[in-house]
Image (cartoon, rainbow, N blue to C red):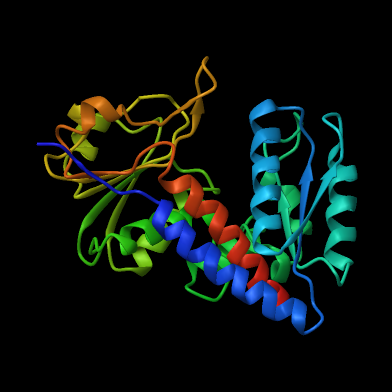
Amino acid sequence: MSARVLSGKELSATIRGQVTERAAALRAAGTTPRLAVATATDDASSAWYVSSLSRAADRVGITCDVVDLGADADADTIRTALGKLSGQETVHGIILQTPLPPGTALEDLAAEIDPAKDVDGANPLSIGRLVCGLPAYAPATAEAVVAILDHHGIDLEGRHVAVVGRSTVVGKPTAHLLLNRNATVTICHSRTRHLAAVTSRADVLVVAVGKPKMITSEYVLPGAVAIDVGTNPTEDSGLVGDIDAGAVAVRAGALTPVPGGVGPVTTALLLAHTVRAAAR
């Protein structure tokens, strides 16, 4: 048996096409969608991602401003910058890129982002509304997980989903989005005892831990759907996921690739959120 590949490329292309049309209509009406990405890091992989996002935005007709605050920026500096961006009428979407300087926390700083412009769902108010099932921008990576499952026709209602990872960026919001789709969700983490025994009972396994190839075949129920959120750089400038794809592909029924799975859908959804915010 070889797992079905759940590519995100076709879905991301569809979303980008829709975004291009909406952005053109907004520009014709006098509004140019604008995304601001605040950074406070010298991390190479982060710089690569921001550059990639900026290029993607340009291709669909969204202006992307990168606000580099410096790797030594303190919490007050970051808060002030986010407050100013939130107050600018011409800025429609705001992202605070991670990692952040030591001693600062995303949840604390993102509280300065206007929820109406919080296109990556980082403000605790956005997360709270998401938990309550109220309108809010979901973290794009979490939304991408559900979007890929939908795109490939994988029914979630009543199914057991195990989410490995409990961050407020991916794990927790993903779990709540799945709950909103009537899945039965187990959240696993570094303190979960007998992790493989838990995950190997799940119909769908979502992994977001940031540890290369951590999940091997014994963690996976035969025929299960495995969603790999990990993007871990390799020495040869490639990427590998949190799932050992070679080992899991012979056991799972379906598997997202890395790269080409969750990543491109995440980027496309960030752009979609931005034009949605601009339309408001």
